[in-house]
Image: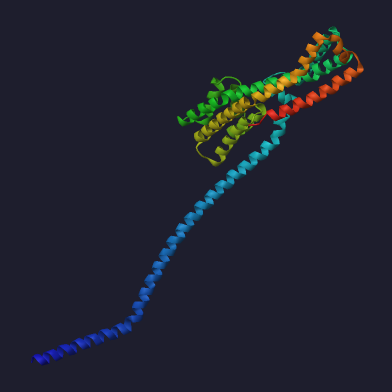
Length: 337
């Protein structure tokens, strides 16, 4: 009985295995297809994820490139405008020079003062008994040279005073912006509280806003009345920040630090060149000192230089050569920072 039961069980097991094998044979393609479909679905999901990552990365790169292009276009535009203004900054018309010097006179009044200066200097040299050639030179120098030199002197002194106070004004604007005040309020604070000539320049920005100009446009006009690169830097920073965005307080703080570093570098260059300047001054004054000593000891020996035509020719040639030497030494000792 046990043997029969064992045979039946073995038969049933074999029959089950055969049925399973037949079912697997019939369902193999379906199982393989489902497995392949799962793999393809996983591949598609992975590809979608990769495409999303690539697309996000591409969008970020496109946005960064667009921003860089915008900043570069702004820089190119500002550079073109700056080059167009360089001629007026380096060699501006007389009317602009008078305005940059902080003077309120008109060009016509300046010409009247120049004529009066020339006549006064000519009269003084004539009363002192100078030769007619010297009197004519005094007329030219008093009319054309002395007044323009005075305007250039006032202009340079005003720029120097501006550069002394400008970094402090930028620091005040930075603190105002960090405390939550808008840029306009910081500029108004400088226009009311800072010493001259910074107060006047920022007051012009406020007045330009009142007639409809924006802050970037008003700051870009500052070099017209303040002929120094630092004023142009300020306008460029405000212009770029208004177009590309960014941290204004950080940008102005960096500009203030750059201006202070430029000031330190200029002072260092001036200190290093003082020895050469002193040597040049001694060399330039030496002929006059020797001539004075010779005149005091032996006047008859040196007077032919001033009383004969040959002496006048020698003095003229010597003056030209000395002028060339002084000009060359000045170019060698002056550095643009």
